Image (cartoon, rainbow, N blue to C red; front, side, top):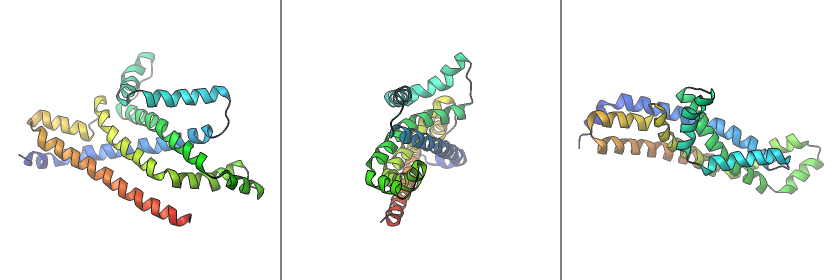
Amino acid sequence: MKFNIVFDNIDFILKSTVITIKITVVSFLFAIILAVIIGVLRSEKLPRALELFLHFYIEIFRGSPLLIQLFFIYYGLPSIGITMGSFTAAVLGLTLNGGAYMSEIVRASIMSVDKGQEEAAFSVGMNKLQRLFHIVLPQAFRIAIPTLVNSFSSILKDTSLVSVLSITELTRSGQLIYTRTSRPFEIYLTLGILYFVMTYTISLLSKGLEKKMNRMYV
């Protein structure tokens, strides 16, 4: 085994790791905003047309491969005059895909909050928005945090697919190094370790945040 290949390319690998983290964080932030909006809307009674539109969006993005979605956004949309950079396309694809999954998590968490608490908030004069932001969402997020963190980890791992958009993230950097060196074992073992370290760190942060929120709402 020749792990000196890894050390010789460590700067390149670390730079691509930063790109991977950047894509993950930006995509997750947009996805969580989208998920909260859709989750809140779908927990209420909606006009039929809007309900069908949101249902259609969720089913399309949950029912088709992310890779196909990325190809469609980056290579398909320009045929109808919609063009964007590879980074934007990657973030958009991961946001729409992640938002579809996470919106169901948010909706289920909202629906699990005891309705009696909303009625009690209404009885003390809170309007609908106040009940949502002060009563419902804090409890819903406490319920949803473990699953949402799993979604963050999923987005992190899904960034490996954006290499097809010519973005030199972590997986793409491994492909380029392998092409030059023909040493797949050392390179892909290193990439696997880096992905594991990042996802495991996120898992630890999730457990700490979950404990903190549990203490706040005991």
